[in-house]
Length: 328
Ligand code: ADP
Ligand code: MG
Image (tube, rainbow, N blue to C red):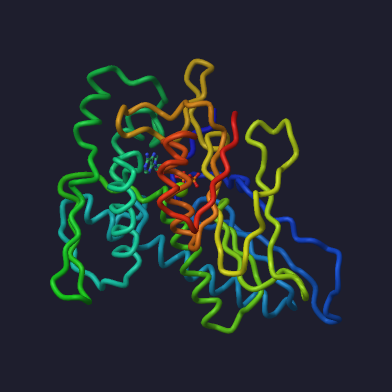
């Protein structure tokens, strides 16, 4: 049985990433640098950084990215007892800077919930618990357990107001916030911005299948070829429908890495908040290309819940995004 919680669960084993980059080794290389790729554990998954550089610079990049991930984790993890999200979940109302990680993530999570008719819902945690994703022995919840959990789920309870333009006031309204479907994407964007601000230009950053690229992978090329793993493992990875341009992101959500197994049946860690049941719509994974990693992360989870048809309809409102649906 594989029972993985969302990011930063203390006991979480390192999961293989859901998507990876093909970094072509052919073509012209600068004489003193080569494409370096290295990975390390972060936010309950694997972080990967690739760029053409010497080891010293790569080390500096890793430090910047790690700091960004830690900042997101200390603010947003439900596994950190005094994180801002944990305090919200205990009923506190929090005032914070409008450009802070939590304010950004909470705003975008609420917008996505509203736009998706509740398919994306950052208050889904009681359902995760009911199915055994938060410890204990996974089992199919009874009707009463499920309806109790469903009663405490609802993105409309999350209230986000502003005292002044630079200050945001957030309360969970009695719901339990869980930004597991969006926080890693945001963390990648934060790392990306810190790296760019520090002068890094041509790189790829990947946090558990949430990828953002900057600049070009090699001299003379402007785009990055990314391949997505086949969820069934039966076929080789397939390329995205188009390469990524510098600045773009892609995220993959799937049921093949994180799930619980109950009586031989695998239940996805992505739950349809409208029914309380783990998604089982024939999809193995959904990848979304988007202008930011937070958008790609939130929308790949949303599309996984909505399925092919409703997912494509949802995404048509976002012309800068492209989706890839892969069956089980
Ligand atoms: P991963 O964490 O594997 O990258 P996702 O980004 O799709 O995958 O996020 C899945 C996590 O989001 C779950 O582990 C859970 O914490 C949370 N979640 C589950 N269902 C939903 C949903 N319908 N809407 C928003 N968040 C969800
Ligand atoms: Mg996601």
